[in-house]
Structures are given as C-alpha cells and as structure tokens.
Image 1 (tube, rainbow, N blue to C red):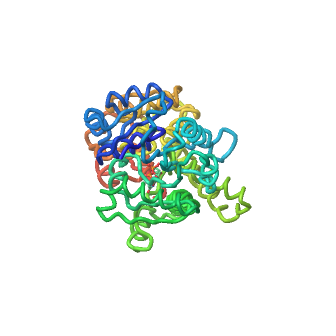
Image 2 (image 1 turned 90 degrees about the vertical axis):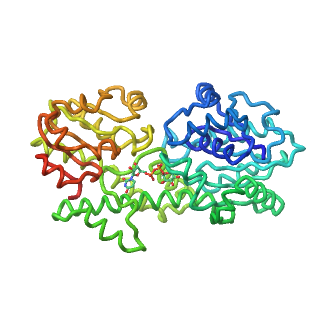
Image 3 (image 1 turned 60 degrees about the vertical axis):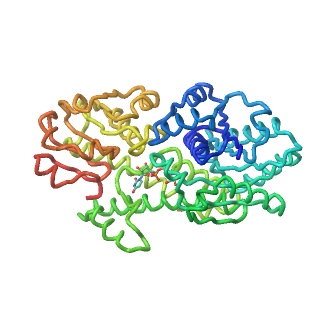
Length: 439
Ligand code: UDX
C-alpha cells in the first residue's frame, strides 16, 4: 500500500519505518530539513533502539523515502495519509497547541487530488473533538478521516508499533467514510491484525479519549505511589515494599508503581494538562480536577528529592559537588523534554551546588536544554571527588555499577536514589549511605 506519514518526530519516524518494514511504500514528510536529510541517509535523528537499522534497511530497499518539500506527486495514489505531528503544550497555558496538526491538514487539502478517494488517519494525541474539526476541513477533498491513536513508549517504540497491545480505530459518523477508514486501516495493519492484536472500533471521540485517558491513568498511578512515598517518609514505612505488596493484587499490578522523582517526557505531563484544559472547555473540569493534584504531586517529587539531597549534605548543598546520574526523562532514550532529572539538577545548581550531569546518550540534548549545567561524558570523571551522587534516571549503566568499584572515586559515599532502583543492601555493604525516596 502506498502511504504518507506527515510529521517525522518520535512517533512519525518510527511509524514510517515500521510501515515500510511491513512492505508498504512510504513517503515521510516533515518541515525540518535537517531531520529529513538525516532520515534520507538512513540515520535516526534521535535515539530509539532498532530504528536506525530499520531506516537504513528500508531506505536502501526503496520502500521508504522522506521529503521536506512535498508535491502533489508525493501524495498521489496513497491509500492513507497518516498525520503524526506533535501537539505540544501551548505557550500560554495547559491546552494543546494544534497549529502543527492544522498545518498538516491544510497541506493535505492543498496537495491532494480531489478525485482521489483516499483516507487521512490522525495518530497525534489531540483534545477530544479535534477529529470532528479536521473532518470539516477535509470536506470537499474526497478524503475520509479515521482516528487511530498510538500508545508507543519511547525506548520501545519499534516494538510497540509492530506489536501493539491493541489497535484503536475511531471512525466517522458518516457510514461511507467509516467503511473506507476501517478498510484502509485493516489493509495497512494486516500483519499486525493477523498476529491476533485486539482491535477496538468506535467513534472519533472514543478514540481521541482512549489516548488521553490511558496517559492520565498512568500518570495517576505514578503520582499515587509518590503520594504514598510522602506518607512513608512521615511514618517510617518503605514505599518500595508497599509497591511490591500492592502489585501482587492483579487488579492493581506492579508496573508504573515506581516511586521516585516522578514522570516527565513529551507525553504524560502535557497530556494531563491538555485534558484538564479541554474538560474545562466542556464544562466538565470537575471530572478531571484530580489531574491537577496528580500534576502537583509529581512536581513535589522533584522538590522532595532536592530536600533529600540537602538533608544528606547536612542541610545545604551550597559549594558541594553533586554528580547527577541521568539527564533523559527515562532510560533508553535521549529525550530530555520535561526531564525530572534535569529539573532536579537545575534546582540543585540554583541552590549553589557544583552540579555535574552525566548520561550515556542524552548529554547533547541536555546541553541545549540546560546550557548552565556542566555535562560530563565520562562516568568516572563525573564521579571523581563528588560529595553526593544523585541517581536521577535508572539507566542500566548506573543501576549495575559496582558500589565497591566506584567508592574510591568519590569524596563521600552518599547516594540519593531518586528512582529507588538500587540494591540498598549492596550499596550499604560497600560503605555507602543510601538515601531512598519514601523509604
Ligand atoms: C508514555 C505512555 O506510556 C505511552 O503509552 C504513551 O503513548 C506516551 O507516553 P513514555 O512517555 O515513553 O510513554 O514513557 P513511560 O514509560 O510511560 O514513562 C513516563 C514517565 O514516568 C518517565 O519519566 C518515567 O521515568 C516515569 N515513571 C514510569 C515513573 O516515575 N514511575 C514508574 O513506575 C513508571
């Protein structure tokens, strides 16, 4: 099937490569020329396990190409135009900025041959009601619209795209458009469907909501355990043991119950804020008012982490050398958007600490985001003479460090475990003071 993928960020670049790997003929479109140049050369513009190999293979096989200057010919004959542009938080509040999305729709309207009966599929995360507006803008083009949210996790994006937990199709209220939308999606995802992936088919609004509801649930679960960590701190209980005990209940489950400095990244924080903003527009602010609390608990996690560092250093971090392990918002990505690790590092820096940040792959992005912080590539150099080590992102390189090996490097063997990811007994046995959050 010929298809275009409009917007080649974390979602679109992976989607385009994965669709080509299923045998489709894919044109990726993005306004960022530098990104397009990299993608054309088979290079991933960001770190995502498995992506670069796939890009190299599919571009070489001729099934995948990219352009920053789409023409009607690039769109002609495509059965699907996937829209995968970002919907970031607006500058002036919590609502989603839909300008890239509407720009993509306008581009389709301009370049599409109206005699073609193609299908536009929105994958971007959007406020509920957006698909309806997009459908109105597409009127007169002959294109049908479907909404098909994506649930991929960074670091597992290729795997999650090719083997998703479920597919969600949001179809038009118009029967002909709905039929064409479903048909085109079934054709695009045939091998994934044949593997037995569950498909949920419903309206635009359900499909739009599934995505924000899923991310709101995950954010709530993480903030729930961080709220429990606050109570643990006040009572001497241990949140990691609490999470373990809670997780055995199948209705609860252990995943996303990792207490620590909280969630960040390009999705959860902005999605819950956009959801609150949209619900308020719908006069249903009350229904998701708890998400404001979820956000507040998450921010408090960063404050508590800084307080833990201060307490570990006798009340003040001023003049102390602190090594922050991790810059990315989670392991296995170089994404630093709304990274709790960099936020904690900045806060420590503002309080007068000499902060050094180290990360296996995210330092280039971190230096752009936080130019005032000192980035140190070499882990051993970063640790040398530290008064305090702060684990902010649970990269395996950090979690698997031998505390006895690195002990002689630092000035004081104190580690704040901002992700509760370290083996406390092993660190204590090697002469370290291990400070957990909520433990
Ligand atoms: C998320 C959703 O999981 C995904 O389904 C959606 O499509 C996009 O947003 P992602 O942002 O890649 O994916 O990361 P995720 O693995 O969900 O982690 C989000 C944040 O929560 C990270 O900062 C992570 O460190 C934090 N987290 C996660 C915790 O603090 N505790 C946990 O137990 C789990």
